[in-house]
Image 1: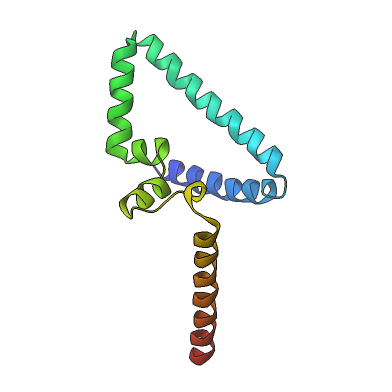
Image 2 (image 1 turned 120 degrees about the vertical axis):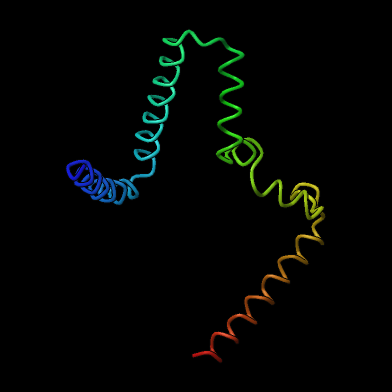
Length: 122
């Protein structure tokens, strides 16, 4: 058990260094990450095939796992879309130029107020 903990700690250390270096090369980072994702999917696919899992069972199990892990809606719909729907907000492509300008003015005003508060706190 101690050996496993040491391995995990060492791999986390190497992973942090590796991610830091790759962050300077975003295309290479994306390419390496995409290889990892494809290999994970390939492994899952091969395991499901070796278990002779039908398409329906695979779909049902995948949806169930995604729902209980909380990833189903956020991955396929996205948090921003859900929040904007709850707030009854318009999408950016539905807004008029005047509405976008008004939001921008509001954000600038909030930024100025935050700057004043920060200066007061310092």
